[in-house]
Image (cartoon, one colour):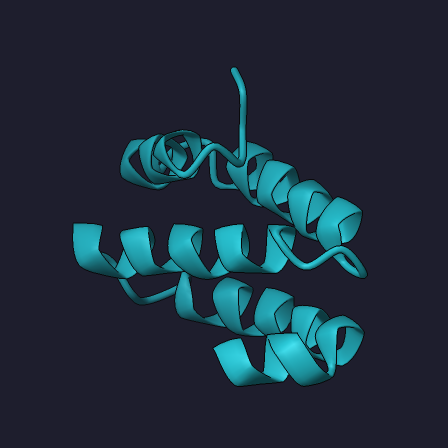
Length: 82
């Protein structure tokens, strides 16, 4: 996913959003949630999609409010400042 973010950032971010939402239905585990935060952080460092990646992180943080580990990982990654 990371190479896609570098070469086709807008398309990759759309794909990333759909994949995260799909996987969060069944997947759990701190490592998995940490990986989501890491990839979103990398996306937020790409100038072309920085704002949209940050908005996605906030949207995920709010929508999956019952997943405290996911919220922690997004905060640790510096994507959410709450």
